[in-house]
Length: 468
Ligand code: NOJ
Ligand code: NOJ
Image (cartoon, rainbow, N blue to C red; front, side):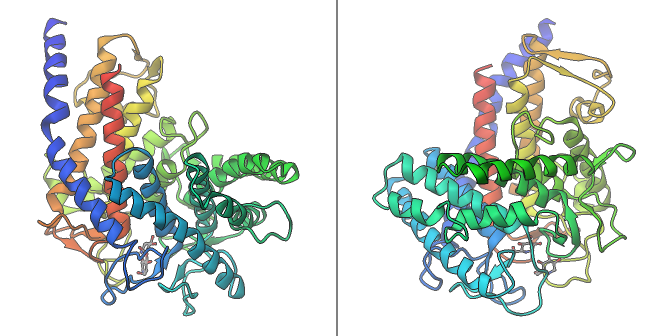
């Protein structure tokens, strides 16, 4: 016990500082790279490019999903005091422009195939060539980010707040307001098959349903706030059905959550990092499929074991496992018939998951090891210490070690990203599975946004540990 306590005190003092400087420096770089893809003279104000490259691959487009996730990351950074005054000012103006730009793309998508249009030119015209459409995570995500911008504008009393309010939500039907249009689309269309977030597979997807669930839960609060009680009731009724459907994605035999049901692609195992992303992006605390849901923990573990196996770079076990999209992936960042690689955004997501698991567990009174979560906790210790039936009690010293181990494990994944980044801190979409060099779209906005949200999650986990 004494040895244990000494270890614990030592760990606590050294560990929060070990990599802090490297992470802080990359945070600044990623923030700059991300903002360069949001605010630039060669695109419409309020648009966000997926990446600056115009060929091999051409990612010089505004993707609804990438843009909404980036706007959400930027909002969190804005609200949490990570910015200089001039950065804050730039982002505030960006958010105002982002609302106008979204108004434009909603209008152009309604003239085309509808609100599930996934991709637009940098001036807001629909991409009219063949593509995997619709992608129904888009409207759900867009509504969330728009309502979050409205929240901040209202709280901070921006001069534009009244105008933003009108643009984002009005109760009349048919609606001309942005979030209301997206909420209605989600509530009426969530049963429809559509393309997944990787733009490849047609079916019903866990990621998309998680987006739709979160969107409707925020939709209910928003509708109530605007005294739109009929809508709130309708959104709630659809939300309950989505909840019931989500349960069907858990596969108790394979012990992981399936990515897609009713799929057009039957050759996939349905083990996919998309599930992890769905949990991180749309977590509802204490609800099913929240971060500490044992089914989510088991899925993380299975993903980790599978990716550790298939990518050569993962033979270096000093670093966390580099995560890909899914094991059968053949998109190498340039062509779709190559060898799939680990991705930056999924590996950063693994780090974020471990940090947020630490923060969530720190609030629990008791953590019980059972047949679903035991492998995860066992591998965290790498010893025989964790047994089925064991309980970690919040007030025991052992509980603190558990939190420390989770953060240290998250650091190994963040170190993995740091190890493979370019020397100038730029991050591409992928990490070559053999050589470890960056590959695919350079400076993918979403790669940087994912590093940023992982780092914020780390800061919060360290604070939770300090307050424990
Ligand atoms: C094929 C990839 O698999 C898909 O995810 C991507 O969106 C498109 N190519 C376009 O880059
Ligand atoms: C391909 C990814 O699969 C997809 O999720 C993303 O939206 C686009 N690239 C743009 O970054």
